[in-house]
Length: 351
Image 1 (cartoon, rainbow, N blue to C red):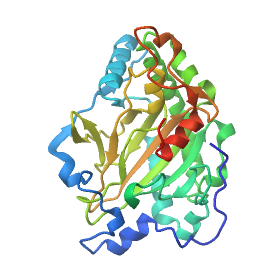
Image 2: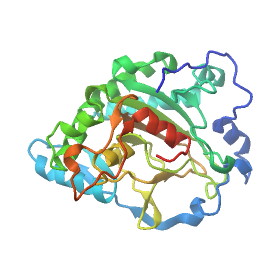
Image 3: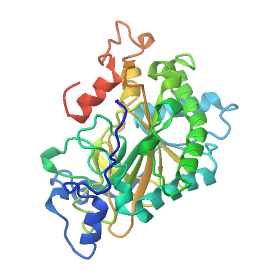
Image 4: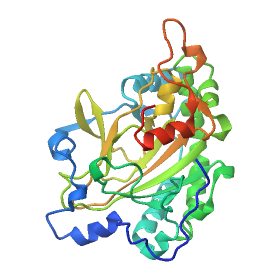
C-alpha cells in the first residue's frame, strides 16, 4: 500500500460520524440509527447459536523446543480444521500486553476528539493507516459499530510515525516493546505452519515476504451499544493478511462461523488468538483455512481488541507454494501482488 498521508486538519471532517460519538448520544435510548441495523440474516440475536461457547483449539507453546513435533501437529490440525486457535504460555510478558492495552484505551477514552482527528485517514487515501471509522465498501450502506486506529509497527522501514498518537506519551514505547516481543512468536508460527505442510522450516515465511513482512496493528474500539441484538462491530469476513495475532480485552465479542452456525469464542486471559488469513490459505494451496469471523458488541461494556495483521509487502507476489502443487493438486488460487489482492478485496471485486 502507498505511504499514508494522515490528516493534518485541526477539526473533525463534518461528514464523518465517529461511533464513539453516536454511542454517547444513544446511550440512554433503546434504539440505534438505521445505518447500524444489520439485515435479518446478519443480526446476532437471530444468527448466534446461544448457550454454546466455541472451544477453539488451545495450544501451549511454553516448551516448543522440546515438544516441537507435538506443537507443529496441533497447529497444523487447528489451521486445517478451524483456521483459528489460541496460544498460551507464548512468552510475551503480561506487562507488555497490559501496557499495549492501557495506552490504546487511553487514546480512545482520554485524548480529546480534536486531537484524535489529527491522525485521521484522509478521505481518498490509498492507505488504511490512521484513525477512522469505515474501512471498506459498506454493503447496502450499513455501518459497523466500531472506530479504529491502524498503523504499522514493524519493520522500522515501513513505519510512519505521523499515524501514531503522540498522546498518551508512553504510546510509542508500549507499541515498540510489543512489536519486539511479537517477532519471536511470528517466527515460531510461520515455522510450525511450514513444517506442518512438510516444508522446510523457513519456506512459508519466505514465501510470505520473509524479513519484509509488515506488521500492521489495528486497535478496534467498540463502545456500548443500546441494541447489540441488531448491530455488529465488524461484519463477517476473512482476514486479507497471512496470519493475524490478536489480543482482546475481557469483553466477549469474537464469533466464528463453523458447521453452519455462529459461535462465541471463549475468552482466555493473556492468550494470543491466531487467525489464519487469506494469504496463508493461498500459500498452502487451500490446505490451511482462512477463518470466517465477525464481532458482536455489548450493551453495557466497551470491547476492544488489538489484532496485528502480518502482511506481505505490497509488491510481493503470493501464490501457492510450488512444492504443494502437482498433477493431483492443481493450483487453487492465482498468483498476484499483495496490493492487487487487497484492492480487489476492499472493493469487493472478484479475485
